[in-house]
Amino acid sequence: MNALLLLLLFPITVFTGEAPDGVQPCNDTPALNASIVAFVESKMKKRVGRGECWDLAAEALDLVDARWDHRYRYGREIDPETDCVYPGDMIQFKNVKLSYKKKGGVYTETMRHHTAVVYEVLGPGQYRIAHQNTGFSGRKVGVSTFNLNDMVRGKIWVYRPEK
Image (tube, rainbow, N blue to C red; front, side, top):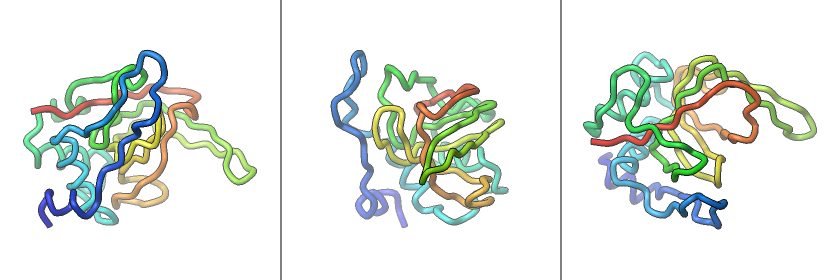
């Protein structure tokens, strides 16, 4: 399926509610990002490359001819606290630990060195991320939620793909 058809079938949701002070409202997803999301959508529940987490980002960026360092810098670094984060942006995790409550229990997740693609923006600092090489989807592409407020340790970098 081509990227345009995928975009028509699977519209991209961007949070457009009231932005916190100092944050610009985020409306239109950049075209390059939309193409990346269309690629990710076409790979759901499939293995990309060897199934390593960064293979998904690498193949998406290469497909759209985006510039990146072929390591872990996936474009121009942005600050998720002051810049708009769009579907199709990339997140690099290092030594991240999440802690959150769900259904009466406290859960923790760790991401020592991990890469994901923002699949959907749910609100400021709240995303659905597409990734592989995870406990829930194995070496196939799956989607989970990520909330910056649940991060108790580690660092993330968010990258905007560019030509």
